[in-house]
Length: 331
Ligand code: CP
Image (cartoon, rainbow, N blue to C red; front, side, top):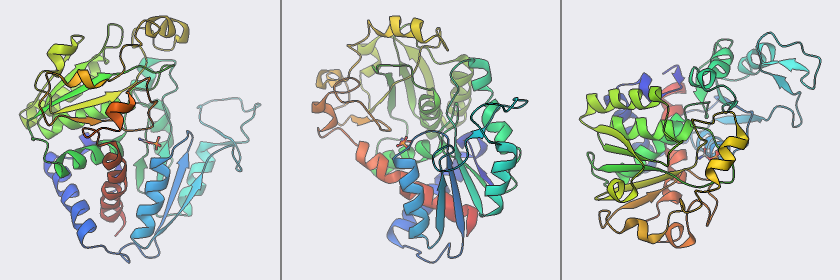
C-alpha cells in the first residue's frame, strides 16, 4: 500500500482484509513490526484523536513519529499555488513537504476544506497539490472531503459490535454554532454504503449533501447490495435504524457564506439528539459520532453517556484501524 487517501481506492475485500489485520494486531501484538520506521505527521488543523492515535499506534508497532503543526514552533507554510509570499508564511509546501518526507518513511497530512468554493473543495485541489510533491507513502489525516481513517475505524466499530452488515445506517445532521466541513459526513456515507448498509441521510433543508458525494456513495452501495437516500423527515429516517451517526456540517446552499449559514442554522437548535429520537429505531440502535462533539448542542448528555453511545469505541478504533494501515504500508 503506497497511499491511504480514500476508501474508494480499495475494493471491499481489501478493506475487509485490512480490518482482519487490525483485529489480528489487537490479539497478537507485533511490537517490533515497524522497528526503525518513522512516520511524519503534518497538521494544518487541530486534532486530538488523529494526532494521538497515530503516534500511539506507531509506537505500539515499534516505530516512531514526529509532528509538525505549521506556524506553531515551525515556519508557517503557504499552500496556495502561485501565491506572492509577502505575508506571514515563510516557506511554501512545495519545498517544506518534500523536506519533511525525506526524513521519514511515510507522511500523513491533515488539511481541512478552505470552505469558500465548494467545487474547489470537492476537487480536493489543496490536498492534491500537496500530494503531488511527496514521493513517500502518504496518509490522509482528513482533507476537504474525506476522512478515510475515521471511516475505517467506524467500519471496524460496527463489526466489533455486530451491527448487521445490511442494517440501516442513518447519518443525521446535528446542530453546531458554526459551519463545519463535509469530510466526515462524506466519508461516513461512503463507508456505510461500501459496507452494504441501507444509508439514509437525514438533514434539514439547505444541508443536502453535494450530488457528487451522494453519487459516489450510491456507486459503492450498488456494488455492495446497499442503498442511499436523503430525507428531512426524522421519524421516517429513524424507523428501524441500527445506527444513528450524528455529524455537524455547513449549509451546502450557503457554502462559503457564514452569515447565510448562520441565519439558517439559528432556527435548527432542535437538531440535538435526545433519547426520544430513538423511539422508532431498532431496540439495539447505536449512537455514533466521530468526536469532538459539543454536549447539549449536537447531542444531549443522556444519549452521549447512555448505553447506546459507542463514541469511545470509535475513538479507540482510530488506533487499531490505523495500525493495520501502517503495518500494510511500512512493514
Ligand atoms: N475524529 C477526529 O478526527 O478527531 P480529531 O479531530 O480529534 O483528530
